[in-house]
Image (cartoon, rainbow, N blue to C red; front, side, top):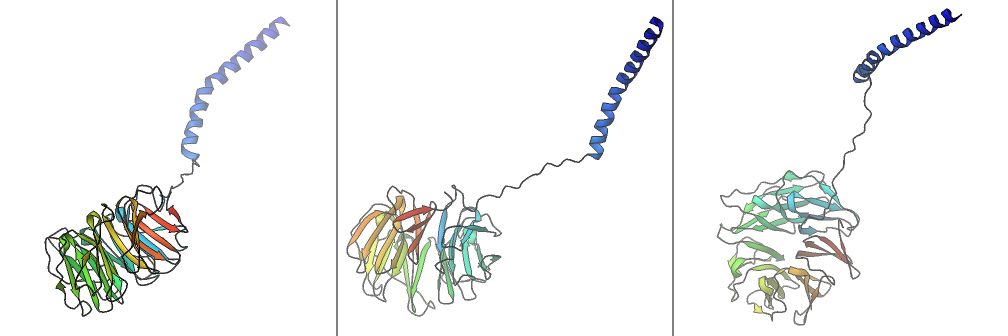
Length: 336
């Protein structure tokens, strides 16, 4: 019996040794099997960037309806809202250059201008932005603003850049010869138009833009924006708090008392009052006669620079250091 037990134990030990010797082979075989036949199921999720990020600057905004708005800015960014500024969607455009200006005929048709003389246009609400044809220049020729009056789009920019488009932004033609100063803004009221720029430059047209003649200004500070409330009464604003008014259709301009030392970048007449915005969150308002001015802020505590203000129903869009919606006394910053 003892001999049989010893034999049994010896047989078991041999079996155990045999199985142990097979273990490395089994492990290696398992690894080969896993490598060749077992496929990983790791799911990689694509993280979409936000339409608006904190670092974005916006230079221009347009609101063709009370619900539809576009804004443009740094890095070729175009965003669109279809719910009155509550949410924004980024639209694709073939550039990473800064876009400086946008204007729209309606919710489907718009034009954009920017650095390096670039322009784009859309006829489908921004689903596709097509390159526009703009006369080439040996100068940088940054385009700073675009405005629409009737069927015509007018674009202004560096080195005397002044262009018009009569085909919804598809092609532009040059209006005035190049010069060593920029045009910053253009406005029309009926057949009478004004273009303003650096060093107090101003030109006026009385035939719908066919011809332009210089207007002599005593103040040689750069004029950044201009608007009219009637055929005769207008306001122009510029650097270092400059404000000028006219009551004779722009034949003469009177320098208004300085209300702030900050640069002023846009002026807008809406609902029987003037609104001016500029650097460090400054906001000036006045009655229709542009005589009694009040200086304040876009919003209490706001120190952001603002390049444009546009009304849309009961609210205003403001752009510059960010994209804001001012409504009911509250400023909401998009993307924050």
